[in-house]
Amino acid sequence: QENLKQQNNIPLNIAITGESGAGKSTFVNALRGLCDDEEGAASTGVAEITPEVTAYPHPNYPNVMLWDLPGIGTTSFPADKYLKLVEFEKFDFFIIISDTRFTENDVKLAKEIQKMEKKFYFVRSKIDNDIQAERRTRYFNKERTLKVIRDKCVQGLRGSGFESPQVFLVSSFQLHLYDFSLLHETLDRDLPKYKRDTLLSNIEPDMISQNTCALH
Image 1 (cartoon, rainbow, N blue to C red):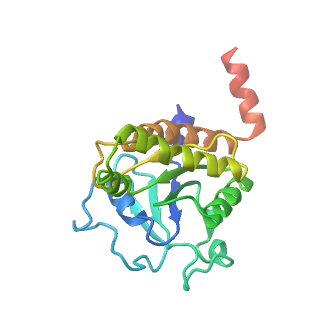
Image 2: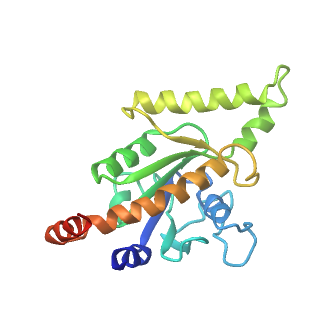
């Protein structure tokens, strides 16, 4: 019971990262159930808006913070200094966002996360824009378009060394469409497990032994 209580109190820091303009701040707002113009929402726009690492509370988990990170590869946050400038190692969980294909910078971030043995998702954002553009074509098919986008993302990531990349296609303005609900369900499923794993990793070995014996 004490361990379960500790689990609920474990702070968990989720970093939303990727290149500038990928829709990170709008995605943070969507996860929190806010429109971009509501009070307390992350600032959004066409220019580089996020000047520093900014924390926002998760709506369902009081001890989970969503961190809106500046875009990697800008003049203020060049790729070769990005990890140090945003203190990348302090985060527990990562969501890497791209609004086109996943770039070399995105891949470098993912590999750095793997080195730290931490969990991450790939999110392909602004799917509504792609669907709208494809509607203008003569032989538009929504499902085929989504499959092409997903397959290109997965193939590109596999080519970069990721065996089974998890890619979610989302629109932060049309949450009922595409993979946003699936992403939310996956996050809700993974976060409690991640917190349990964090708790267990901090328990003294002899304490684990005593608990195991008590079960028998």
